[in-house]
Length: 239
View 1 (cartoon, rainbow, N blue to C red):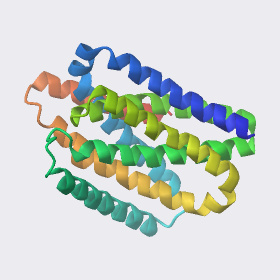
View 2: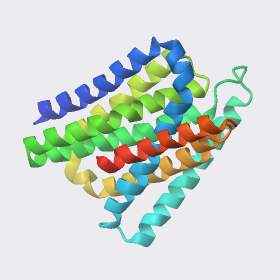
View 3: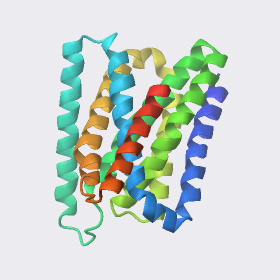
């Protein structure tokens, strides 16, 4: 069973990395498409939180408790972001902003949970695990591409962004291993981690990514960003 989990999580992480590497060598394309990646990432984050995570959690957790956890997570991410901002405000590298770090934290939590969930589905049935892996891969591909765009927009070099994406993608593998060995222990905790991830996604999309898109003054560009944002939401809805 563990070999299926490892194979699945490694393949998903590798597919995302290959897509990012391909785009990394198309610098003109990346420069022109960075804001579209930001819009896509914002859409997938909002869609994942509101169309999947929150509805699924509401079936298990009391709504009042769920909303409280999401609100606390929102505040926690705000505090973490301010801490990172204060730390780097004294740095000589003014291009490095907290948006990239916040995005990596949220993505790491999400990938870890995806790995645990994949382990759970493989524990139930191998065929179900394969189907779940396919669904996660379809979701991760635009998510990782969007995350790469966010890191570039935050001032990271493409190699820093690739390295960070690779490290963060490994949290899915870690989640799969942890899920395999400790799923019975994590089953209750997973709900709260998922709620924290939902709060983190909402915070990053609403306070960091969407405001960046609002800086665009050209109406055609703004409409195209909105359409890409909607595409991100649609992708999460269809999955």
